[in-house]
Length: 157
Image 1 (cartoon, helix red, strand yellow):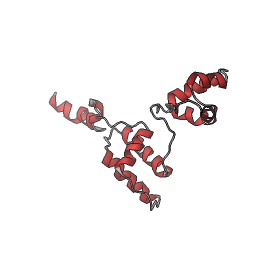
Image 2 (tube, one colour):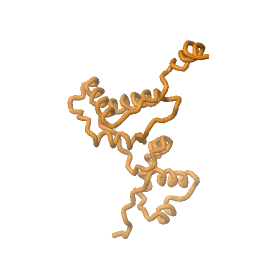
Image 3 (cartoon, helix red, strand yellow):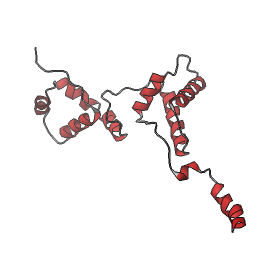
Image 4 (cartoon, helix red, strand yellow):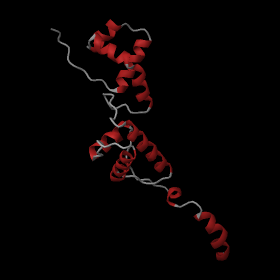
């Protein structure tokens, strides 16, 4: 029976392991150095493409690669969220939850029930942080400044 403890690597650590394997470090040496089994190393190597794609999305704090059971709802919600953020519209958890429920109905997902925990996991998977959208330029609607310069400013002068 081996004395190796079970290790759970982050995505960033897995990417470093993959890079070392690609540079030519032997599997045996790497296993001994990290204190892991050959099968663990093989599993990391087999899923290297998926690990690298997640790493490129800057989602490095997670340890396991899990995806939603309702991929189509998740992709639609993510696209909708990106569009709203590009328009500087503030989005909160309940708004996301309502929109996800709406997408679930559109895609005829009878078993889909959007909960606050689903939204929390969605935010973690896509590295979404709710923060205040600030800045003078984002608070003024489009066209207001032009209207002011053309009509109001000449009368004030």
